[in-house]
Length: 323
Image (tube, rainbow, N blue to C red):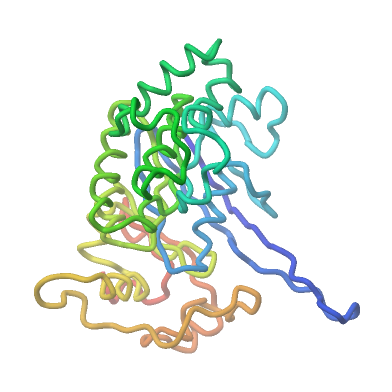
């Protein structure tokens, strides 16, 4: 359904007070490719600054790309305009990370959830809009009679995010980009929101691009998993395969950082230092300054994302050692 091909997004960096300084750019996403099938959930994981949110925003047509293409059912979304773009926005929706900023504090819940119904001509009048919004609020686990005419500040964080989910499914989309939808919620309400999203996926036949920095959440949600680091995908495959047998040292370290009960299962690996700046990308493999297995070839040659199994790809020169 969705195909991302060699996606690159570079943001220019201000030259400050020196007009003669060499202009640089932040390479937020650099050569990312993957696909999302109909009614599939793919989880995109990685540390903060790895380019996950930028990738999601490009797919939602909220950020322009520098190079590459994003195709939705064969059509390049960057070439869409007018009615074509409006139709795409109806079919692809986004759930944002922060439920406190993604809702307008001056608009009531009925107007916020009902706005896409009006924009896309789904509701013909206010009475019809209220009926549809009431049904949507009930579907996301809220009592519509208690929420319909309230404002965001009168709701809890979990309730606000459920309102955001209701707004996202109002147009009956086919793909939802969910940008860390539970990271700002209390632990006690996260499971309920994740279960709700899975129920909606079945009811509405949705596909998800589920963005997260939490591998445990990604494992729960994603059929397939893409591991990003510093703008590139380092490992891609079925979630069960990657979680049971990771082939990239970075994935192993992410798994090691996930809280678990019982003995450690991936060797106690630890990354050295912090993620480098996306302005000054390390040569060769981008992970080599932090990788305990790095060799000279890692410092000079960029590893391609290659298939080690039919459903498992990895970008590491020495991945066979971990296979």
